[in-house]
Amino acid sequence: MVIGMATALAGCWRLPQSWSDPRGPVAREQLDLFNLSLYFALALGGLVSGVLLYILLKFRHREGEKREALQIHGNARLEMAWTLLPILILVIVSIPTVRLAFRAHTPDRPAEVKVRAIGAQWFFNFEYPELGITTSNELVIPTGKNVDLRVTSRDVIHSFWIPKLAGKFDMIPARENIMWVRADEPGMYFGHCAEFCGTAHAQMRFRVKAVTPEEFAAWVAARKKGAKVPTDPTALAGKALFEGAVKGRVTCFACHAVEGTVAKANIGPNLTNIGERSTLGAGLIPNTDEHLRQWIRDPQAIKPGARMPAHQHLTEEELTQIVTYLRSLK
Ligand code: CUA
Image 1 (tube, rainbow, N blue to C red):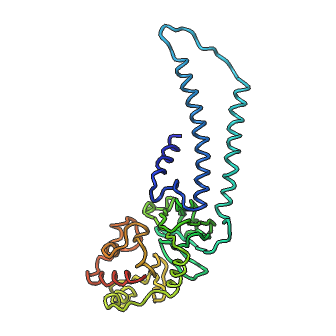
Image 2 (image 1 turned 90 degrees about the vertical axis):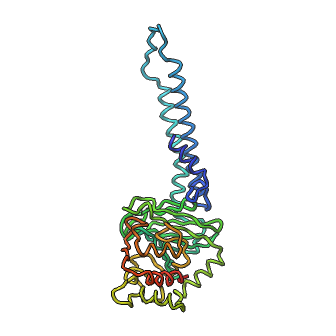
């Protein structure tokens, strides 16, 4: 009961990952179910604690008192009551629980956007199979539309959770779990991996950016064109480095994809629109030139356990070139 009250209070603060501040139908129904269970727990906890307190006070030992309390064995009425009442409460709570278990993966109307969310140590890839585009760590969705989410993993078990929209759904290798979300209003919704998955589990975050349907259509159109080819000479030098064209320096293309270029690997996050994303390191730090430079030089210093190797051998000029190129990708 104490834990329930503490989490309920904690949830009341309208924090970015507060599940008691739902902004979509699935999260709202999940909160209603939580509240129903909480009210029963509070009522029962109050009743049991009250009776216990009453007995402790009423029958406490008093100075000079020798009388032993009346000893009884069995009470059919009481035993029936404390067996049947919990059964009744369990039945009442189980009806909306089972209903929600089905609703959480059955949209109330057909989904208009389909997304495959893939967990990996320690970031997320989001594929839009019908649109032919991929992004990482920042899922873009249109407001007011149902989004069908197929969640899976390519290594260990992760869990997909956007507290204000829906969750938690396990991301299991070689299996797709089905869920859906709908965001009522535009905004940035914070998500987190909710299953311990190794060293950087605590830093395995993502964001859901809900935009108006018009903005979403414009974003999709822009993304379908692939990455822009930079004209700036510094960015072009960075592109050459990124694509391994400068011998013995760096081979970013071996792990990352930038659609429309020779970089097609998917070992690390897809970087096609890295310049427009709000964070680096899977929701860890704001996406700025300086942070990107620090990230490329030594990712483990920012995110212990990160799979990306450090690139301490790069010169300041080379770092500037790569940063300029990546920041131009939007
Ligand atoms: Cu992925 Cu925890």
